[in-house]
Image 1 (cartoon, rainbow, N blue to C red):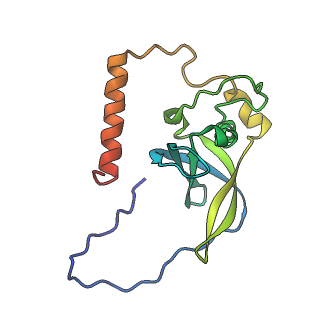
Image 2 (tube, rainbow, N blue to C red):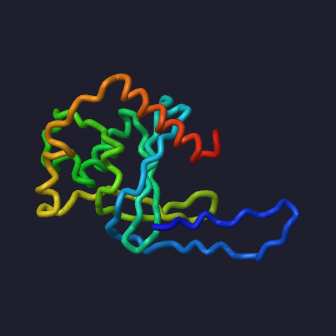
Image 3 (cartoon, helix red, strand yellow):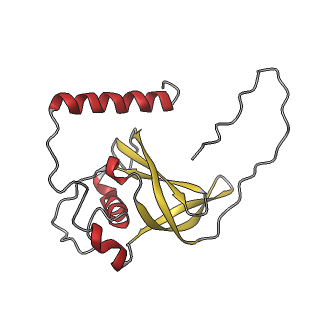
Length: 178
């Protein structure tokens, strides 16, 4: 799948004037695939302490891409749980007291069903993922208790450090070095 990266302009060059081609999607239920998860940081506010953010990007079957920002904070644990249930990495009927391991790398490529809605911001209307929906019973059954390799080998601290460093370098490159 090729990504359109656009074309670089010169500072004093000429361009073809264009209108914004963004069109709102109809609110409703859509099937999607988790395309990637970006690690971000929330600096905190008067309502929530500073915490990491998982920016989840999904590609809908119609080709559109939507994002949702999951704040890794106890105040939004319900939404994180909703996400992992939706992608089949947590059983729908898992006991509430059962801990959830947030496997963001394993989330990439997973199928899900989302509810798309709209929200207003600065006098403009945008699409948003309003709900990560529970999977259909038959589709979720094979994935409910298996999270990849049933007997994964432990990762050494040195290897984990290299993985983390590589991920951070890739994120820095993706964000233009910032």
